[in-house]
Image (cartoon, rainbow, N blue to C red):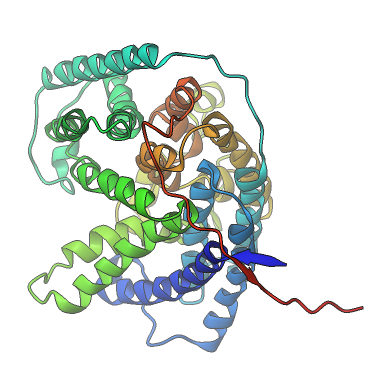
Length: 435
């Protein structure tokens, strides 16, 4: 068997990512006990051995080629890894061993279609000029939505406080805001940036900040940092390694702030990166497992259409959990919502497979695009997948629109956007086989 240097780097970096994740989770336990990040005085042998099972997923990431599903799968791997570690210290009352194996199986089930379904779709042959017109339409529609939103009022309050809900707008405008921020603005930025139209690219990032007084959402503030970081990273590192580093580098920055920034007594940097960016998807799995261990399942009634047709014992799941645990609005990924909450731990892998199959449409729609274009334009979409239900992400946060835009976008032109490919240097790996 021959592995390239890039293959080895990916495998080693993922293993290092696991170690840093454990350190980060332990630090979160000391810094944020109110978030139910259960404190541990040290790494117990049971937790280390139990979490080490996750190493079985490393070969899949070494063997698979880069695609949109690869990015989603790695972020899911991070969430499940954190949950497995956390489950050895949690005080929530549920079948911990069953939950661990359920989430491991659900991750494997989702990864199969996400990383290994390779379908070539028919695509319309649009010219670059036609695509430029579509981009102008997207910008004009975004500007019109912003003007309409501002007409209802603005607020510059704390994104963690009541300012986010201080102004009431029609539901349609709220949906448009989610779609524009989650899909349209990242697409506009990477469209211009890959064509070296830097003034327009910077303008797209500045335009994104104009939405802050409307939504009071920290995501809008971080967007002008996150997207350029991804654009730089995927332009200088091979795509699969860049996927791992996209989580690892910010996590190391957050840990450094936790350890060395004595002036940051409120752990602002650490909380933004290591808690909300990395740990929350894992914490959500722990919360949902504890919540639904003793309550009726939703049977997908959290989906608006089903709620109106058949009724539901719950409102939105995020506020429902917030009322019980009092540590914030815990919306969560499809592993928790379409999985644990809807069908329970036993059938969660089946639900995860179906969700992975749906998201694999994005990989098929974008297979002709450069890794850099895919990674940057989906920079917020992947975060959405990790933190909201599948149906909400597809419709209200613009993931379905992003898939459509990928499908319409003309074939990537190397002259327009270059992503360096790693030098492929075979490394012989001897594998002893039993005769």
